[in-house]
Amino acid sequence: MKLMILANKILKSRKGDEDSSGLWSPAGLIIVGTVLVLGFFIIAKIIGILD
Image (cartoon, rainbow, N blue to C red; front, side, top):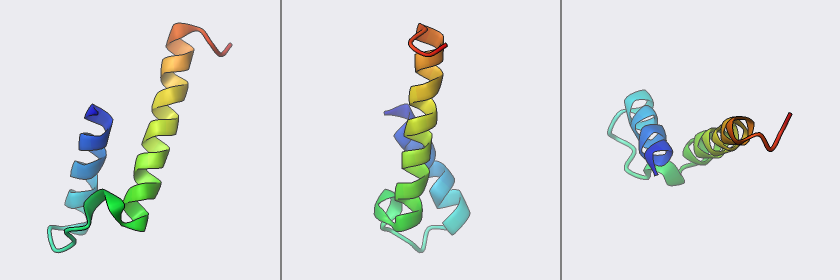
């Protein structure tokens, strides 16, 4: 959940507050997807799933 909040803050700071669609805009979905994928790989590395 923290990643979603962080991504939303980054989005708002980039686009300003005029866009109320937030995470559901195309750019928001790309950012959230990237953050989730990177987060997954980092967690997998830490746990040791991936070598």
